[in-house]
Image (cartoon, rainbow, N blue to C red; front, side):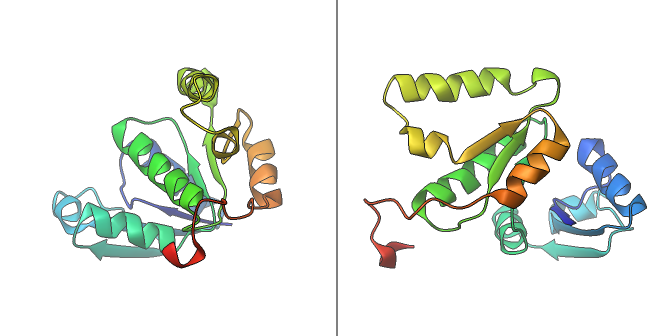
Length: 160
């Protein structure tokens, strides 16, 4: 497996990138020029792509990814995972989306999503687009076994 991520050398993702590199994995970073200038770009990656904007970053990361897994994080983490789940819901991609729920970090978010289903604001089939697992090995097995659901009925094929 390879890792595609935001290209930084700080925080949890910098640590994850270093660990993946130590295990011999290919690690691809994508970072906007503004963050690269602030010297937070990881210079020891297999590939480092410097782009213009955060939107370009997300597009480039998505183009290079076969799955999307969120680790504990803040606003950026939530924004990115919800964008790719929305893309899956719209049929823009057919890749697995998942949360690694370390020490219950995402419990409140999972409860919120389940509540949204109960309140009929989120269809169960869309809720099921997001896998949640507490164990990395089980999560990776689930990601590898993932089969995308058929394109949703209300989406015209030419709209994607």
